[in-house]
Amino acid sequence: MTTPPKFRLGDRVASIAGSSWRGRVVGAYATTTTQEGYVVESENGPSRVQIYSAAVLVPADAAPGTQAIADIAAERARQVGKGYTEQGDDIYTYDELALAATVYACPPKQREMLNLPAVIWPWGQHFFAPRDRRSDLVRAGTLIVAEIERLDRAAQE
Image 1: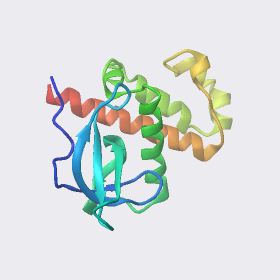
Image 2: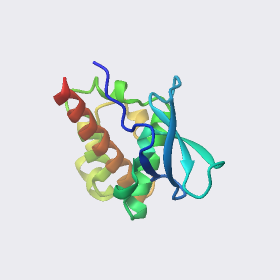
Image 3: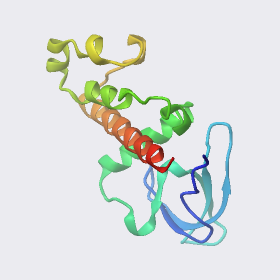
């Protein structure tokens, strides 16, 4: 089943990754790494156009104001750019995304004490790459968003 497009021509959108960019959707695109992308014309001038993955765009009136939300969206866009797409997420029907988020969200000392990566990490250990606390929480948030989106898509089928 095909997912309906996130935006239509003329919709006002805002980027939640990197710089704050607002504009209107003037076109759409898809590539092998970006399943759904949009051409956005800036509100600051008709000749200023950017392209964005759907993952980093929100309706302009719903654009979050915190850096944490922007960082989660940027991490999701980075993951999609590496090939971790919605279609790939859809195969994880046994809570793998939520389990991975749990491992990243757990404070490092407790994670180590409970040996969480060995106990509940759903993929090969070489895929677990903790960094600093904030980066790990951003990854956890990104995985939670991916799991929620997967559940929403499954409910539409």
